[in-house]
Length: 177
Image (cartoon, rainbow, N blue to C red; front, side, top):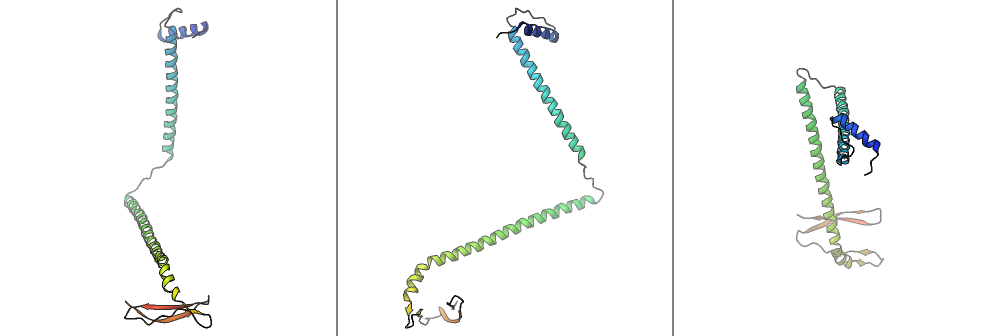
């Protein structure tokens, strides 16, 4: 490491002022001591910067605490404060409970819809094979299904029917239970 004479003399003088020891210019340990001295100075500078930063943060925290005004309760106000907290907690719990119950019923309704849709889809082949294969055509070209009277108490005869706007007829069947 090349070292300029001016820098070396400056270091020797600074070291003597700081520690009271005069170093020789020909000392072999001079570069090592210079390195250690500079490393120590850098560490001290970093610590001073850190201390200054901590002092700034402490000052900011102190200032922010003074800006807040604490709530001072008079006699009898503590009960009102506790009742307010209790009412707020109850309202939050009721809202959460209602949301859970509503979610349960919505999920049950959707799962019931899905089950009904699956029944319809799964029974499509039976309807195709059972009902539509028995469709008949009359002399006017109308297609109809012919039902035989029920046996036993499984199905009562239909009692209501209606003509729909889409030119179809809906027949309502009654199941005996």
